[in-house]
Length: 253
Image (cartoon, rainbow, N blue to C red; front, side):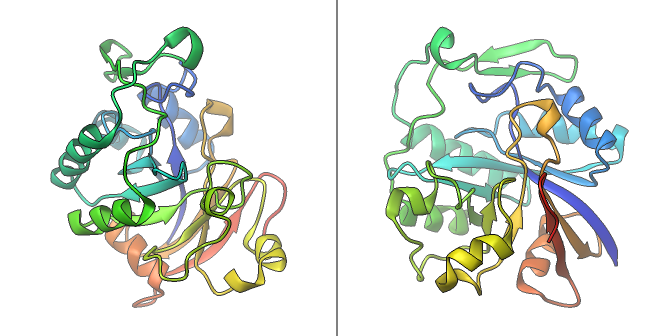
């Protein structure tokens, strides 16, 4: 088994709130500096930067899982991860179908850029990516699983754009593989204040929008290799795979 240090919530120049330094090579260089073995690219409501970073990642000996941070109708952020690019193409079409056609204002929200590995701009997305889809969290969860991905509500401890801030609670019938905590919390501190959720599975990621925040929070997995299939086994504690620990910028648990 390998011990894999993973940060599975990283934004790029495609997210309007992402810094323009969040280019493919810069992200991978910083991830390597921070000792990460695996990252996931999770821009707001778009997967268009996943492939270029995955293609470049072999130069840095870092595995990349393609993903996305989806905003539900309730304005709760949820992470979705996928095994391959056939699945990514399906979720991308789904996102484009259900994202309201609101025009981005780069001066107000920031640019939404698709770039290549040399930081050349290939496309600027005009539809604002940080708005909510016109579907509920349950509808989005079912679509993610139907496509073959996994579903993890994001930064559930945050006072906005989290499932708890938007719904007031976590539905116990929600089909989620795990729940993400931000870099400002930990499973121990969160469950001490939220005892009904003490038996949930938790991961931590940085939600980095700036290079310096990459790996501010991360999860250590004990798995055979850095793939989503192995991550799923670790989340389910199957075949010797497991979550070893989670870490954040303030404390380790």
